[in-house]
Length: 316
Length: 316
Figure 1 (tube, rainbow over the protein chains, first blue to last red):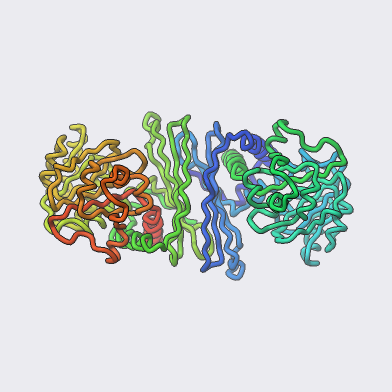
Figure 2 (cartoon, rainbow over the protein chains, first blue to last red; figure 1 turned 180 degrees about the vertical axis):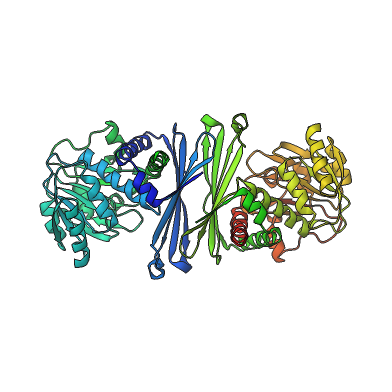
């Protein structure tokens, strides 16, 4: 079995290939071709930590993947990152472990950013005036980076709570070639941007329905567990097209679940990203529609990105 | 993270310490102090394979364990073992992966054999006339090896279907210092041995009730999934003391489940090995009783043996 470090994985991964594989993974998932056993969860109250174990196999593929992700929130006081993680890739032909990817959670970040790219490519309006990024963390950066592949727009407006974080994001985005505006006022962001990505762990809505202009596309990636929320449920209720990575999962948690529980939308309205990508259903049909993609994260993304990473590392 | 090979693990593991830890694990499990998320299972029909992922954390311990076991039954035709496996040990204080134990399934075999040792120590009659081993495979060997720690008896009678396997087992057991008899007749075995271990993947009873003499102890380790069975349900019904590793699991499959379904025993009769080891309930109380221990395998054994293996390897 090969063991690859985070650095080896970051250097080797072919992002174009990875994006294609993640997109194909969404299609396979929506066609019911992905085996995903129930997630295993641990809570470690004595250490303010948790762990989840997700596994997936895409039928027909030669490999399957087991991912272990940890979050220990007192780690920074020990000089350690809060989040850690690794993926194991095994042969679906012989059961042999093929690779241990010690990515420290990076592959999860990048597969989430690639899902944002895929969502924008499929659903954003044809003319993007400005990109709006809600949040200033790692995922806020990776989402912007991955959007450069699908739009020529180089205007970004960034919302963040702290001046220091907004400044740091400005430096990052300028280095990427963007004209950058930062704001503490999310309404300002909604007035300028018509391709918005929300990336925070917020537990209350940051974007109000009345701020959002017709034609806007929103990809929401922050709300990935129970209790998190970035969008006004009324905004979800008002959207013309609502796309999710997994109808089953997004009915439980994420942006959509809040609107469902409030009776503002009907489960029948929900489309899966894999259905849109396969062309089985229509996504955006005109530039006046509001579209929302809610990404809570599905294990098929891990299966696809880890196989890509293994292939890229083996060739490097 | 340290990566240890099967050979390193086999050389380093302190079996005395491991047996103590596995016994403590059973006690913790029966006290409800072990967190065990639902097992993840995959089936790979295209390759005649399967995979299961078991995880456990013993509350208060500094580590937790994720075990991946595979069985690909066409592997021998490719020159590979059917069974493979590995364990990952992570910190329950920081989430960091501490060790990858590439044991190839050996730790699962040895923790099962140690459970047999623990069961015999707790429940076998005081005077062991002969040890009876049903089966001639790897587990049949490891069980005998581990029993040498708890009894001075060096007479063994072995049941196996094939002459070549019986002969090979004879060589193995003689090298261990045993006087060996082999047989194709399980009744013969029951007539001689009063400490019996059954280790086969049989799907029909191999030991009939009427063959078993008063005072006999039987440890059954073969029936670890649905459909497997080594003991006559009437024998389970006749036993004076029935001990299981997990009441919840043994009610689903294993020897006990067949007798439960047939109405020959009541769930109230079942004792857990951890309860017996803790002294919370009585096991055998005289040398005329028939005792049965049904071991289907629980993830706490993996958590305990992997922590021991990590400690032993780190000191080696």
